[in-house]
Image (cartoon, rainbow, N blue to C red; front, side):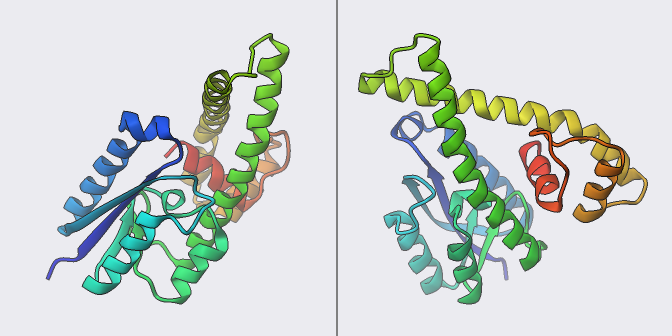
Length: 220
């Protein structure tokens, strides 16, 4: 008997919701995963809200529907479900069945906790970097007083931050691939070898298993 899935998608802003681009990309990722698993999507729910809110109306509906029909919640990535460690841990403790298309059913609970922690940390970093990028735009003479200018400034700042982070992560990936080819495959072992080679993180610090996982997540 094939698994039943309840699809859940989320974007953060009205602009993303209206364009449909973020939601469509998530739908394609989910559809490809479910097809590969030989499963069936029996319902689809989506929110246009920040990931810091875990009382999202459509998410609550999705969880209730999945529980009623004994189905799995499926998202494209873990941060689409939540960026809060306690919320993810609560779902796991309550035995709520959920799966992320980019990780699959085989991921263990320990790794889910790590990715949830990274998502929560990333949310805080995004907020900090957005403020810094807005300050930089303001220093360049971009007027942010009007609401529309402020929205456009935030979108531009967020895009710039993401592009920079992905570029930095991609530059390290060949080194990580080489380390893996030598049989060092755990996050701890990769971090230790990067430090031994004196390769710095994108922020100029030492590597830890969480920073390795974050770099891999950005480019996969």
